[in-house]
Length: 380
Image (cartoon, rainbow, N blue to C red; front, side, top):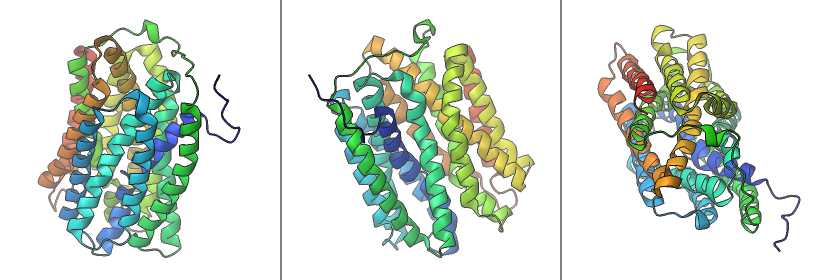
């Protein structure tokens, strides 16, 4: 008989959420909040920042391809490596001054982010068989965004420049990783207790190919807002700390996973994705028509409250298909999502103009999301 984990060990879902918070919230999305500071300090140009974002997403794609070989049995070890690698990448950026080297490190960080997404999902949902904990797992992304953004706001208030901010994030992610590691190792020593989510058996099956396409369009659609929102805020509202707007994005993301999980159980995959992506499209296009503090905050809430919801709906649906077909669909979905995210900043850079800013880019992103929503309703 296995010994019970100690009372100080984290619940498995909380440990997996911390992996997501570190690998995704800190490792991927903290760059969005630091980017305006790096522009002001002359460390990156707008074009170089776009390349840093795209290379990070290319690294995410590479990590997803590597993650296709991962198994649920060893997923807890991959979680540990992803957190350690993320903390190292964040800390190394504290001493990087070359834009080319910074872009390269952001690419490596993208690899660890994808591995964190795949490993945490495999570990909690497959190895630990806690599919009902999916909302908390994916809420970790929003929690990581909100906490890292407020840490950055605090560091800025204390007078830290971007190098100090990166070091602050690296230290915080390492500390959080120690708590997550204890929960991962303690839970992995136990036999899993299977528990299917209520109503999962009644959800009608969906088709794999349209689901993958919809997920890829979703990756393209949200990433322009997720990359440039604080930069847009800094340009339009110089007196407002963009980190706080980015924190609102994360605050909206964390609890929304529970809402979209419930809606998925009630409405099914097709309708839940349709409403999720339609609302997300509205949030993406909003700053084009309402370039004010209220418009940016509402955009942050709408996009933040839907983009992790897309993952919360689509990933469990993919896992249901994978159990029947024995395909590694979760990793395949992560690959296509990564491809969409690579295209987003490149399209944004191509469509950017001094007169119209990112209006055309946001319009293209909103159109992709709306199209994905219609496709999910008609083709899934």
